[in-house]
Length: 157
View 1: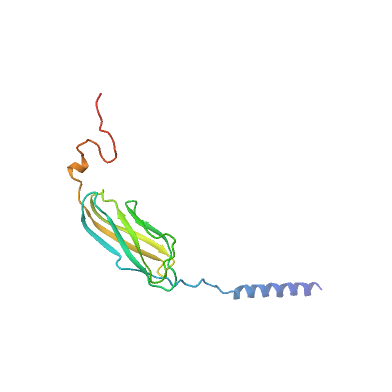
View 2: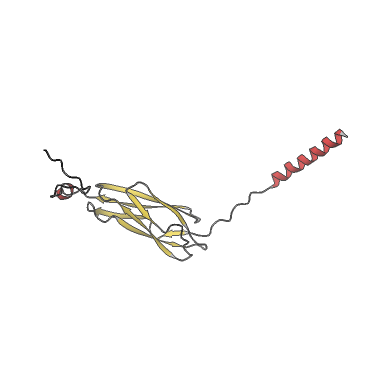
């Protein structure tokens, strides 16, 4: 009797082990959305100190499913992207990602924005670059004695 019970338990356990191995991974279907940019690099050339450091990257959903951008992250705090957040972009529709660089930082720059979406190409990178001229004397030391911060110059009493 004990042998039959042990044999039955062994058969049941073996059946479960074999069944568990036969379970196949069922992957979610791949998205048919696709993000396509007109261009991925914008060169501002030379910009004035505190000048316009904004550029709009044009893109299109060239896929068959709605495209959803879940994130756009600049490579540093001086590069700020604005994008259609979690809004379905229909196949064939055109949208923009606006990238603004802080042009109160003189010198050469190359900055990136990493875009995350549900597209086949789930991660894309766009780049801005250029050179910001140094501040003029008036910008660095305004005639009123106040910098943009609104700080009052030190006075002796």
